[in-house]
Length: 199
Image 1 (cartoon, one colour):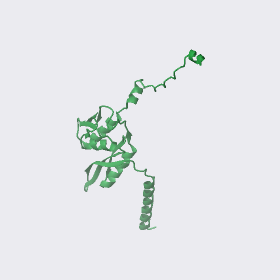
Image 2 (image 1 turned 45 degrees about the vertical axis):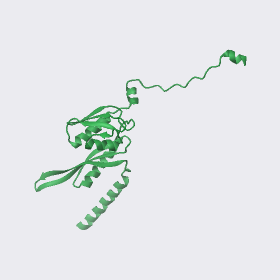
Image 3 (image 1 turned 60 degrees about the vertical axis):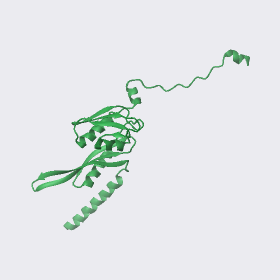
Image 4 (image 1 turned 30 degrees about the horizontal axis):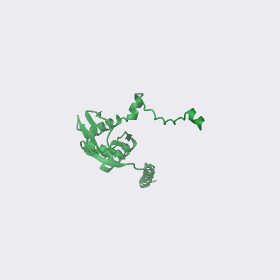
């Protein structure tokens, strides 16, 4: 077999594997938003090799969100990698109306993000990266503040750590052993025996 024949066979095989992967790819869930794209450079013997790093958030707008970083030689490939990874690692957190249940601080590396519930109509008061995570998750009223590093990757991951710490009222009651008992059905009024005999 010639080299050209081998190359064509390899191309067909790779194309078939790619088609199988695309068929097996899960259906898209929610909206994908690119938070940050950076160009990277690796110094090698012949010069520099440039690549791209993409930070992506995926959310369904109902309290489910995922964040990931993808790296590749092309922007679209980097975004695709990040999106796939983010969908695999989505988290779910409790939501009260359009805000979060309680105040919390999330930390990742040198970045810290403080967030607090807000009254209806307040809107999302937060920085660029943190705001995109809230919007993807469906949070419409919240106050947030960056307390440390302003690195976009660390800020977004600190936001995710804060969301993981959120607990609903029911979950806290169960942890404290104060789970609310279901309301008892009202008892039927008993008819006095004398009244029954009179009838």
